[in-house]
Image (cartoon, rainbow, N blue to C red; front, side, top):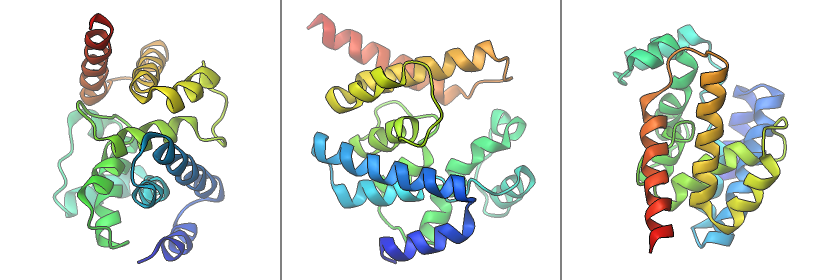
Length: 195
């Protein structure tokens, strides 16, 4: 399936606001790919499809993950909204014909990140946070600048803001992968500064 066909199908599956967000992430992913030397087409596809399972209800996300034997962590069970990324990677393969493992991984980890992300994974993770349709977030202008100059710094900044928000808002359990990712990239940026 080509991207225009994916876009048409996606428009029928998402709310208007979520579809506009997906188009924004598609665009920013392509821009970041150009700046950082990644494959633009792959970035556009991953950005477009990153939220393809977002508009399912919490019950549907849990049921579909169980049906397709996708693992569900305790935190995901308590916060089924987190499952949209994992389920989205599954849908991208099964419903949109994506076979590229890096695209699928970029979709799967676009909310939590993961240690040692590929460039494409970082691009989609960052694009999801900084795309122009997003509501105003703390330090967003600085993070947008960082995204185009040092993507690892922007990854750390986004994770720090996200973890701070989750702890300040008492949102319950924080996904362990986000904490592991933050610690990994903090140590990487600290090592690079020491060199």
